[in-house]
Length: 315
Image 1 (cartoon, rainbow, N blue to C red):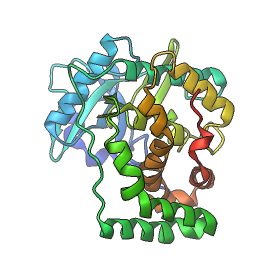
Image 2 (image 1 turned 135 degrees about the horizontal axis):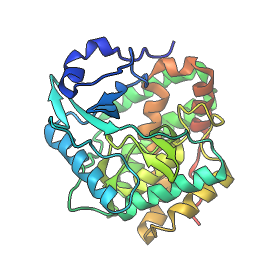
Image 3 (image 1 turned 90 degrees about the horizontal axis):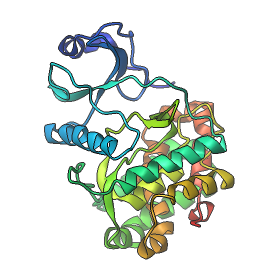
Image 4 (image 1 turned 120 degrees about the vertical axis):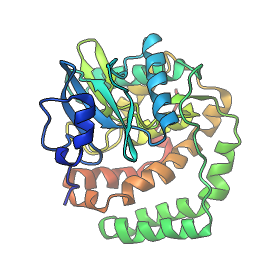
């Protein structure tokens, strides 16, 4: 059973604050409240953003900074009321609605997506910055918990060999994977940390990043690795797997028109893929057990569990 989208009726203060009209009964996204509507006479989207006020303001500042540097990204609407705004324990943002279509997996779409991520990373590190990326600090109890999640949530749906491989990655992550990445002096940028097909709308002039709210000031290499692994997750318009070889070659070539990876980045790329498979990949595999009940997502997760760094060579 898939998650039930949030109800508009549960957020009356949100719509009252923004004076929203034409509100749907439920969120258009199952995993987080996202409501298209009309605000101040314009088509808009209301969505929950970062929890801390300073972090919500950072998202607003960085998206405006990106847009000023030619990055196609939504920026908060200029309104007569505070935007972003804190309501209860959550912060909310009103963005413009972007008309367009979804990503279809063609090589033209793939190239445009790689180009946009390259532009995001080429925009650099400031002056405004997103919240600082937090490195994991897993003790043995957390490692044991992650192993248990793999065995209870993923193992009933996946071959034993795949689960064994993932368990091995979890158990050696803190000693073999994290330290070289954390201590590698990798370049930091305002990174999306959620660069997925579902977060792009293909407008007339190309893709627009419409969900910038999960970004961090983080190693760009990890943002690139996460995109390699999870760009196709939860996206019904394409086959249920990460990039195939031709798509990846197209994506990384377009990305490389804007970003030249350093020697340390190229050296650590295989570990970056393992890092994101252990962190974001593990969450995808275990964080929402109902995902395994959806045929398309189950197929994607099985493909994800088989991924190796060699599947994403750097040119």
